[in-house]
Length: 401
Image (cartoon, rainbow, N blue to C red; front, side, top):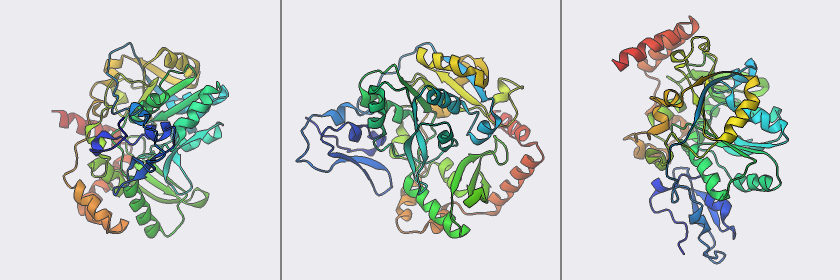
């Protein structure tokens, strides 16, 4: 039997299915020099050569994409505070609220006490707050697949959310369907390294000189269509706010310089998915509905199963929604179908990350140049005067031509 062994790192998405499934508990997820988790067999004497680790790998056992009937919607949560706190329109919170109210449990990505991004569970409505807002860092699923399985076997309703590879990893791990499992995947650009995230935290702690309580990657500080990184301290005191044009972590993310190797050849970029729901942004909501275009956030929801549709019917009283054909909903969405291109400076960037401080690293690769300052000034001016959305639309139309 073949032990799980990563020869080419492109072939591992880091979902942790193998470590969760190992009956001997000898497969562990360990960080490499870039900060990404990979499985290793840390005790060969305990290994019983059952090959389960390979059998549950979603990359090794990739499911063939086959078309089926889908439903598409644009969604906004009716609770404006929830929508404000959410990355887009608050669709996930609506699903999660339903699960909690049914006595279920919800798994998603959140910060731990050290601001590391990990998967954890929530069993009450208030705890759902920790899942809101994007975290552009690869989440550590730890042993949440095992936890979810235990709850499923007990008959509880379980909702598990994550990136497409994490959801396929969960499904591969379970090796059977559960009627009481609801899965939600988020359309993923790519997942950056936790090592680089820690370099960013190091830099911000040094610059701000205060304890960081929370960080929001996609805050609606300047409106939904102008993403901002916002850092808060104790008592929710605002310590820092910068847009996508000038925040160095956001610039690194969109430059594709610090992503997991598998993200450059992602096996899970497709329209027809194994989840019940796929959710993602709708910045171009004006192409679908003028009434929904209020710059406060809208979620695209693609439903893949009858179970998903049943849940949607039960939550739609919480939502403003518009049904849209799945083809139109997904048309032109590169993140759904195309892997990102590797930044040619990636190798050197990670090499420098080993020896440079967070401040040195980010200021070398993403300096605050006059061009950056000018772009930030123009964007902030447009946002504050209420013309940002219109200017962005004009710019996109010119680029298309």
